[in-house]
Image (cartoon, rainbow, N blue to C red; front, side, top):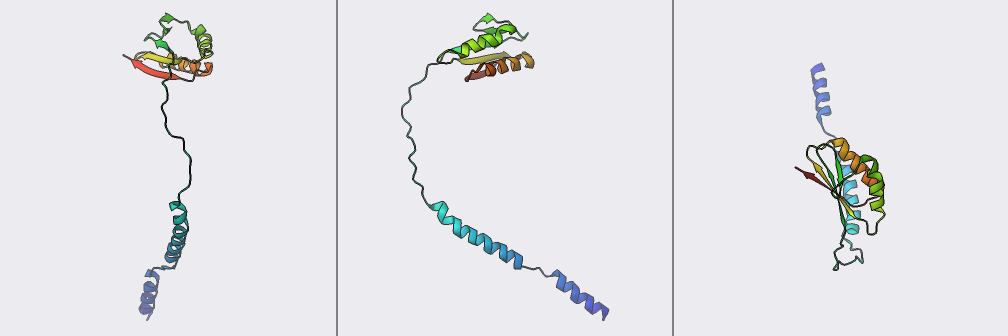
Length: 133
């Protein structure tokens, strides 16, 4: 008799209660039924159309970092002490020039980050980077 009672309890425990599953599925169904019409409705937008834009002629500044850490601005050697002042002066020009940084592959990371930080602190908005072998 003890074995029969244990068998009845084991079969009762092995049944899955599907009521929470049905409740969750009904809630999801209601959510999808409510949101589907909202998602399919078109909203009127007046977006700007792409038109012909004239190319902007921007002057370029060449800043090169040699393998030994020497910085050259437009071909002339620039001491590190004058880097900030030179870049701030260039940033004041209108239209602002694009700074093209050419770093040698063997150039130190410190020299590169110093130049990049100085350019950003000077307020130069257009900076392009290039690795030179």
